[in-house]
Length: 176
Image (cartoon, rainbow, N blue to C red; front, side):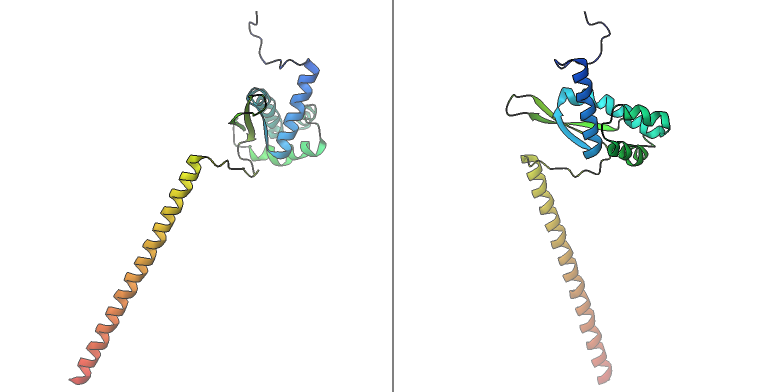
């Protein structure tokens, strides 16, 4: 029975599993987003959140604890210099999991694991809803531009009418 046994085995040995998560969090901190399966993302999320908490503390012991999990010194430096201070005011929830759908080869559910306030550029997947939303936004922008043009046209028409009235009043005064 699995009473109070947490975590997933992924059909790997303990050493293989630990190394897999070390590689995943190193890639996550290097690129600020990775694509993997949903179950791996859920497990790697806990490791990544703990490392970001170490980076927020910033002391020597925390750096050494994080160095046990992060594979590359440059990524460890980035974690403590850039990523940790970025989340100084956040109490947790540094990562997000976005589901992508099934993988084509084996139908495994894919997900993106990314840092919440990441500077990584997102690749927008064109779906019918996004295309429709873009079309609606373009139509609204076009309508706003048209409304602005009509407002300008009305203002110029009003200004020309005032100018014509002023000229006609001046001519009447000259005749008197």
